[in-house]
Length: 392
Image (tube, rainbow, N blue to C red; front, top):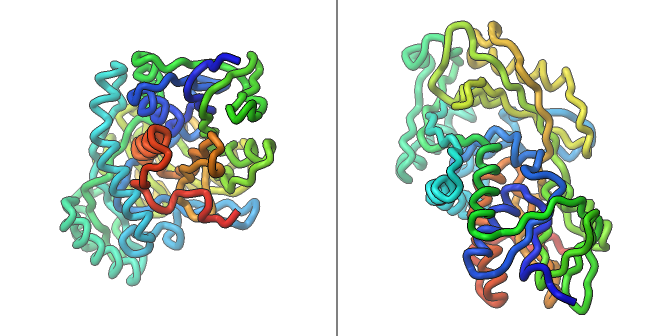
């Protein structure tokens, strides 16, 4: 038996692609397998928000219930997250921004990095107290942030809606074009010698303790396999006899024309995100629903997103919907990714679960995977991402 590569990566989302680059830079041969290049889920169609300060949406555990980023699910990181999550977020943000010039130079692809200040609307006294305190913390960490009282919002832009409690103006979150980010990763990986094979991944078997990847275009042998199949990670692992708690979180996003009054210069954030991106479209994002792999576009999601958009910028009523997209985020029960070998001495790694923060976490996740492959006894640089935390 001859190995096709030292490392095989199953899945070409941002986690799989960045890990292939980091592992290749360590001197290993790497083959990435997927049915599509680029992959066509959250890696390509996400809002591309890289935010170290505020959480994205939580996942509702009730089957079939649609909901979006509401004030009960949109917390402030320093008020609600675990220490492990805070550490991961801070590392992820810094590593991502450090990596952007490298990927653009190595690929020739502009990822459309966009520094947009966030205007976070406040809807209750409780939120006001929490965000006011958080703004002080963010400023102390280098992210200039300030409370904007209700009567001052119109001075930022007279088109913005005022609320009884005002808003917080936050500097720190950035945005990228998620599809360009993935295309850049693919080109960079190819340029440094990563091999890509387009095929349907059917199964994984162990052959003399070496992973054998069974695909629609033949078998691939390697010393170590990385299962990075995004929202399909859990179902694929179940098929091969492993219980890995990664499930799909459905997200719907609207892409719209600008309002008739023209562009606006902030990322508006309340019950949803509203931003005029560098691609020329206004994005309204995103709903969250736990409905399995149901890809149907819903009027429920569309109407809700339109409502939230006009609540922040009333003139969005004059904008037209250009597209409504659906994708699936890979999500774990505690919102943290899984980056771990499936068992002692078994050369198979699970790499998935970025949820709504997959793009931001992709670089630090890829670095971590490369480290544990290069030296299986190395101490972890990221806590809280082991598979054993679920007690399986």
